Length: 287
Image 1 (cartoon, rainbow, N blue to C red):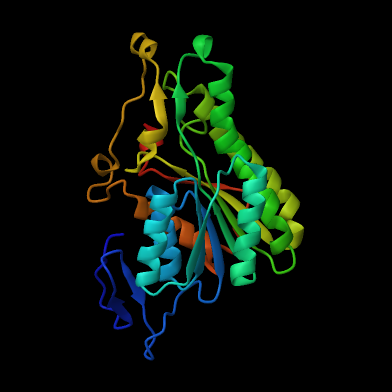
Image 2 (cartoon, rainbow, N blue to C red):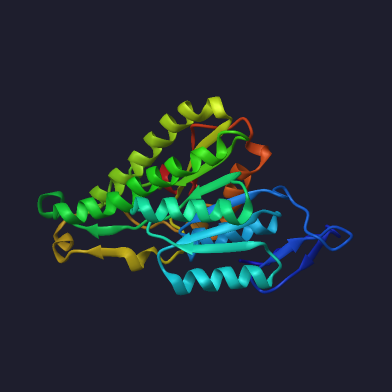
């Protein structure tokens, strides 16, 4: 995470992963002091940046990711920076693994206040006509079913005290549809927004807020889970990557921009916000 400049005397710099707010007695103080956050896809990109910001604001963080080494790197860095953090390897498309991981988080920290259902893949990019059904299903299994399973299994631990859930969707499938080959990804992201709205309605009785974050072009490792087929070269596309700094100078599309919105949704600052999507794309999707 990027270090930030501030004149606030409470701020003291920590390790190169970021900084923490400090009270006069040296302990952390922040918007999320004493709360517990669970982050899926926490091993890199937006998930890692969100975990750092949540910890920075005083939250205890439990990380999930399918990649053990990256997960451990983030857990260790946060712990060395003074955060209370733990982790579990889990594939969000596997219900048994998700259930065990959520139970482990509650066993470790005693409660859940905020859940960031962030894990996702681009998957296979192919024309609809030639998209293998198995590849279609694999993308939806992680992005859409994984979101459902995460939310399903955290509800029992959030019903009594309430809390907040945020889901990483995308501008693709919600505002942008001009990219050949993204049918599975876009469908999964549109489905997430519909799911968020339905869940927000159902869970309002428990004071659980549910919202979606729709990032635009953000520098992450998602290219590792992107598998375009050669025939896409024959398909015209209106889609062009528009770097956000071209629209809003000095505001790069980095994961910490999304992480700031995650903190907002995790905190009481968003206590009257539920069932909606927030676009983090520097107006990219409006072109």
